[in-house]
Length: 321
Image 1 (cartoon, rainbow, N blue to C red):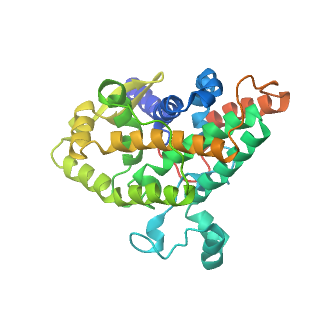
Image 2 (image 1 turned 45 degrees about the vertical axis):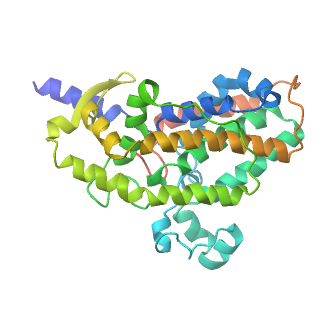
Image 3 (image 1 turned 90 degrees about the vertical axis):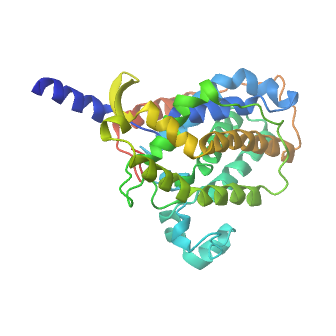
C-alpha cells in the first residue's frame, strides 16, 4: 500500500499544467488560419502543423528566460479599480508614471502584443518566411493569453482566495473536456483592425471584468461538491494526475454560461484579425512561392534547446501549476 501511494504521489507531481493549455493554444492558432484570405492561406495553410506546434513556444521560454514571464500577464488590480484609468495605455507614458521595473513586475502583456505585431509587420515587408511563421505563432499565443481573465489579476492562480489550481482549471481542463465535443468555432473572416492598441486593451479589460465571476462561481460550486466528487485521478500524457472531475468541470462551465468557449472563440477571431492586419500594414506582399529555406542551423539549434530546457528547468516567474 505504501508503495502504491508513493507511486501515485510521484505521478501526480510529474504532471505539468500550461497556461491556456497546450491543447487550447494549438487549437486557437489552428482555427485562426482558416479565417484568412486566400492570399495568406497559400503560406499559412501548408504551415498549419508549425503554427499549432509552436503556439506554445512562449510558454516554454518561461522556463529559460526571466524576461519572458511578464509578457504573459498584467496585474491590473495593482492599478486601482476597473477600468484602471490610472494606468496609461501608452508604453512610454506608463514608464514615465510608474517606471519600467514596476511595469515589468506587474506584467506587460498588452504592450508585448503591440511589439510582436510590429515585428510581424516588418517580417511581412521583408518576406522573411521563418520570421513570419515564428512571430505569427508567438502573436497567437499572447493574444490567447490576453483573453484569459486570470492573466489580468494578481490572484492569478487563486492563491489569495484558497483556490489554488483554478488557473489551469479554467483555461486547460474545461477546454480539453468540451471544445471538441460541444463548442462551435464557426467565425467571421479575418478583419482589418485600424487601431490595434485600442483593440488589445479592449479584450484585456473584458478579461479583467470577468475575474470575479471566474473566482466566485468556482467557490460557490465547491460548496456543493465533496472533495472526492470535485477531483478525480486521470491519465494525462502518460502521467496520472489529480484534477477537477468531469462533473464538476461541466457544471462550472454551465454556471459561467459558456464564458470559456466565448473567450476562446474571441481569441481565434482576434488572432486571425491581427495576422491579417500585419499583412495589410506591410503592403499585402505576395506570399505565394516564397523562396528560401525556412530554418538555418542556428535557428534549428535554438528550437532544439527550447524543447530541451522547458522540460528540465523550473519556470521563471508566475506558474499556472
